[in-house]
Amino acid sequence: MTGRSLCFSRRHALQGLGVSLALPWLESVCPVTRAAKVPPTPPQRIGFIFVPNGVHLPDWTPQTEGFGFELPYILAPLSAVQDDVLVISGLTHDKGRANGDGPGDHARSASVFLTGAQPRKTDGSNIRSGVSVDQVAAQAAGQATRFSSLELGCEQGRTAGNCDSGYSCAYSSNIAWSSESTPVGKETNPRFVFDRLFGNGNSKATSDNQQRRDVLKKSILDFVAEDARRLQKQLGTNDRRKLEEYLNGVREVERRVEDAADQSEIVFDLDYPVPSGIPNDYGEHIRLMCDMMVLAFQTDSTRIATFMFANAASNRSYRQIEVPDGHHDLSHHGEDATKLAKIRLINRFHIDQLRYLLQKMKATPDGDENLLDNTTLCYGSGISDGNRHNNENLPILIAGHGGGTVDPGRHIRVPAETPVCNLFMSILDRFGAPVDFIGDSTGKVSGLQI
Image (cartoon, rainbow, N blue to C red; front, side):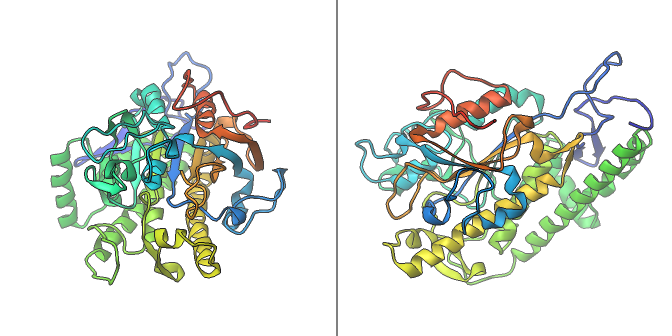
């Protein structure tokens, strides 16, 4: 490192008018004493992404195992990041099955996705599932960051009422559970997430100062500029460049959030509600939320995040890819070729948004590496085929290198009926938060690392 050899607290942030702009990982910013010889390595992060209604497995599953597999149609958008992706076939969520509880596969698919627990069939207040893997990790690492975890989504949900054959809407709308009876609500408005990440923690002050910034037509960065200039004088050349790139990135996301808020005032003929501040374009909404996840990880505001692209049984249409039909309706395709073609397009659209996130993370410096190198991201659905509503051989993939603990770029196949929770056990091990069990785990998944 060039320049002064200084260390600041990881809690150090740029300050100004109700804004606390956390810093990215810099060589000069490290929680070590002056006697320390080597700065610590960047922390590991974990993310989980849920998509509803399953996928068309023949167009998802690679034909060969190991390295060098050919990406099938749905996964083709990942070609630029194939070496960062590990496709896992054969995983099962047994507790997503009825097991005597009758209909309600979609609600179960979301509630079981990160818990591996059979949800109690009720649409009352006596809901019960299990503690989700993200919250297990948050309990282990949450004290090290401003937020123990970050929950994101693109569709608002209800916490009460019947959403699927006698199952509470709480099951369909949430994948994060801090206790058996407590789902962790998600934020769907990128503006609110942005203000949460970069506010000073006081909701009234944040709101008041946001209004003041709006009136003054100034960026968050305008209010931390003086503090940023002071800090840059104390940084080495590499860190000054990283800080400048980070601040430019924050401003770009801020601009897009503002644009989305402006667009939300326009009325469109849509068959689903678009809350204020949310882009009318669904793809842009997903990408903005992906940016929020990247910023949260980059600034070490949190190390654990979940993201529901849509709620369970979502019947959202996809006009932007010329699919005006509802997703859930199409998932009951009955092997109809026209419907299957549209399902493939929806599945591929989701993967293209994942590609955006992975490339964004890969382009974000993190110490001597990049953010994707130090992240384990799990993407998938709690249903295999939307037509059959089955829960075996789920579409699951892992992206990232987990701080060197995962060897991606491969397709692996685990024995039939291997619980998804065995994968979660392995992820927690690599995160430094091992547990005796989670959900219906029976062990761990081997083969994540060669």
